[in-house]
Image (cartoon, rainbow, N blue to C red; front, top):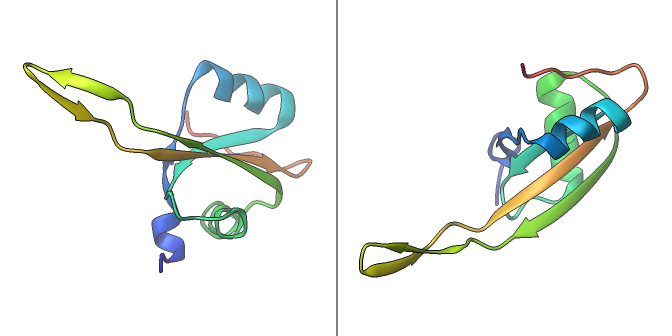
Length: 93
């Protein structure tokens, strides 16, 4: 079982994440692969003291990469887009 402290891994900063922040008041995180939407919302509300409107998640498979003669695989990861209520802000920069 994962705790609330294990849910959020890091903010995911990309061009699309910045666009979602400006247009939809959303913040994007990389989260634990076993975390569900309720746990993600509770973690964001507790750690950043903001109100969450909705959470959307997406699972990504790790890419197969070559390391010299050997092939390896990157780790699977999960992305969560957290939509904040009106008037709430969260800034990482």
